[in-house]
Structure formats: C-alpha cells, structure tokens
Length: 261
Image 1: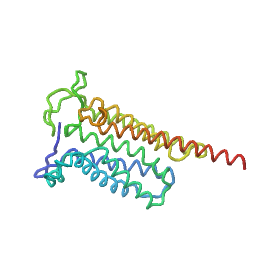
Image 2: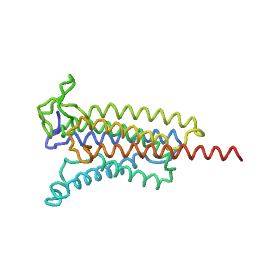
Image 3: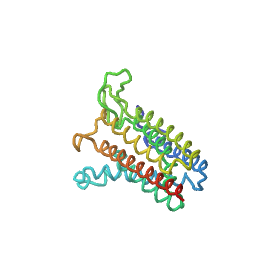
Image 4: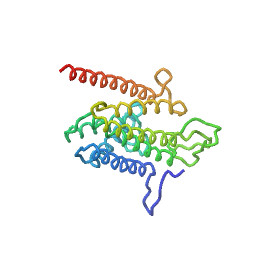
C-alpha cells in the first residue's frame, strides 16, 4: 500500500490525492449532465463547495460518534488526517448541493437527477484513496484468491481481507453508468418520466450497495446488530422508494387531470 507520496520535503497523503481526483471527476461529469439538460450552472464551483462541506461533515460526524473521547481531547482529533464517516460526508455534501442548486435557481428534482451519476463516480474514485492508504476500511478476513493484506497501511493488517474499497469502486461506478443511462432515457421521455426518478434510483441502489458491503466490513455494530452505515443505507432505500411512489402518483394524477380537461 502507499499511504503517502513523498516529493522532496513534502509528504502528501494518497487519500487526499484521490479525494481531489474524485471531486474533479465529479465536476466534469456533473457539468456534462448540466449541458445535456440545458441547465446553466457552474458544476466546478458547486462540487468544490459540496466537497469541502462533505469533508467537514464526515469529520464532524465521526467525532460525534464518540463524544466523550472527542471532548476529552478535541484538538488532536479535530485536525487529524484520519477519521471520516461516510454518512456525515453525505449529509454535508448533500446539504451544500441543495443550497447551491437553490441559489442557481435550478429545479430541485432535475438538479438532483443531474447530481446522481456524478456522486456515484466521485464516491467510487474516492474509495481508491481508502485502498491505497489502507485506512482500516477493508473487510473481514477471507481465503478468496483476491483477498489482500495491508501490512504498510495506516491501519495495518497482515491477514488477507476483503478489499472492500475496490468492491465499492466497481459497484458505484456501475451504478453511476446505469444512472447516466437512466437520465438519458428520462430526457427522451420528459412527458412520461417525472423529474426525480434518477435521484430515487440513486437512493435505492446506493443504499442497497452500502448495506451489502457492510456485511463483510469490520465496522462495529450498534443498532439491532447493524452498523451505522447499514442503518443509513436502509434509510436511503426507504426514502428512495417513498419519493418514487410519490412522484409516480403525482404524475398519474396530473395526466388524469389533463385527460379530463
């Protein structure tokens, strides 16, 4: 593993490099989606603000998971290079995106549809940073041929374990490609597909993927034997299903009303 890249006197964490690459990639994808949807907005500014908000949210959420430890000695933990929670990053980044979309006067549901593929690819690429740094985000021990050890990682292990960051890279990029295709289909059938369906698919598919990968990850269990990420994944699926049903019902009501007139 390569936790750090040394350039003369500089020591650069590979995790940070991959996060930067993830943000840049997301910005290009989001801008392409804006262009095909005819939305006039600066994706690079939005992703920059959302990325910084997501990093802050991920750090804050992780620290508040164990408030006793944090408040006992807050400053070293606050400025540590390690300790970021996926769910906190999702909340921080999502909130920032919604605010930026509102400021740009973009229709909310169509805006969230455009953000969904970019979010998937960005998350998947960002997970390469977890893999390179060996930050403890790997899975349980395994005897499968692709099992890997992380002896030089930030959180080292000599056991062969599931390389879960690579699983997530593959799955999230596949979901992102599917969502892009779904967006293309929706744009061709604007009268039949209500805005927001791509975002609903994002909530459902990523929620399922997050729940499943946690089964083989070493994160501690809390609620009913589930990890925090699994609970968040279930909540994401429920939110996606409820929103999709609402959009479908509203769309059918509108079409019915139009036919009566």
